[in-house]
Image 1: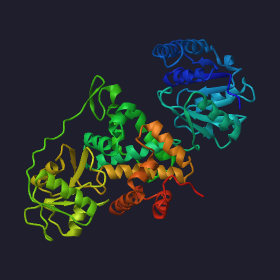
Image 2 (image 1 turned 45 degrees about the vertical axis):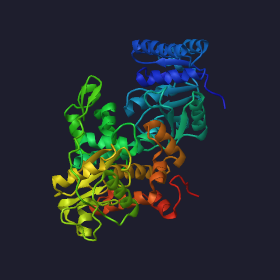
Image 3 (image 1 turned 90 degrees about the horizontal axis):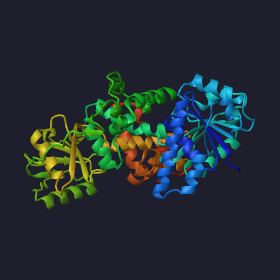
Image 4 (image 1 turned 60 degrees about the vertical axis):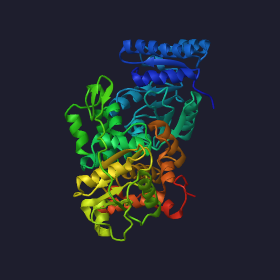
Length: 502
């Protein structure tokens, strides 16, 4: 299979210039077109500067950088693209505009020229439907910045032939990126998978369980993501993120799993888009995020009674208390002044205290599942006294750990976000939007997760994730938390979430 000798890129903005740089790396002649001629000049100069910088760092030989720069050419009109083997459109996100552009291109290019769109949200099938030869139309979705984000989604329309898909995948591999095939669906693969994090974080905030900074801290420190959901919203721009949230939700016929929040819309209405406006979920001093400090640890040691039902969790907490020198209450019935620690899976502190017949004013629930690392999580009932809340914070902080205490919630913060991430990815697999392996690799590369979402499900245990989701579904009565068949079946079978259908 031969690589394209001439690649045309339409649109010389941030994405277009990045795509042009990657195309040049394959050895192809690159023609760059934009309705603004000066944008093309600026883009070629920018790419040349990037290549020269790589040569100076030694990552690209000087002669290779010069060869790639020499292969960058400005196109004055669509007619200059007639000899292209591959045309990648990176114009503005408007379906009618893209359909008209593809019709115009069909009138000038060869019958075997592939027409690809870099759209992040529009239907590839709808774009292809405007063409007389839709079998050669596909999506080729890069991520920003294209040279550094080493994954590209290859999206066939319903009408696309397999030869087109194969040629595009080979082109992507030629510049060292990972091609992942995603079926034409709202959000494709990576943006769809990313909803598991953002939508649940908004739900937690809307419910008043924790403030923005605490949700972000828990996601970073307990789950291991590089950025919290609200940091990420501020980075991408809430105007962009809110539109994507709404579009994917509507595209899947308003599936409750993908439901956003009025809080996202309110941020947009207020013009608080994030870093680019100087204010979003956080305030900014230039590019620096202004983040509230964490509360001081002020609690005092008191006798501690620990729920003995989960022997692993109770053993960990007992060891923590002993090492910190706190007195243990080993009574079958807790003492009248003891701090009561429970370790529910999926349930909240109030329900747990009620089921066990414990005094809710002294009860604090500890996230013993994800909370043994550098950040530990706890939550109070609606009536837990301040002294007992702070005593729990002090005990969990023993040894230098950071502690986040939230209001009551089935599933705490980290487990419910993790469960939503895994369940969303499992639903993508169930719908055959992508293979399990591609889901994991694409999300790891595209969203910077420490592992793919299905691998995270395997790491923390599918049965535990199902338990958290079932408990939330039962508590809220919300189909948002229904377990996808892919996840439930593999949990019952005791096999990896990466296990494909036989």
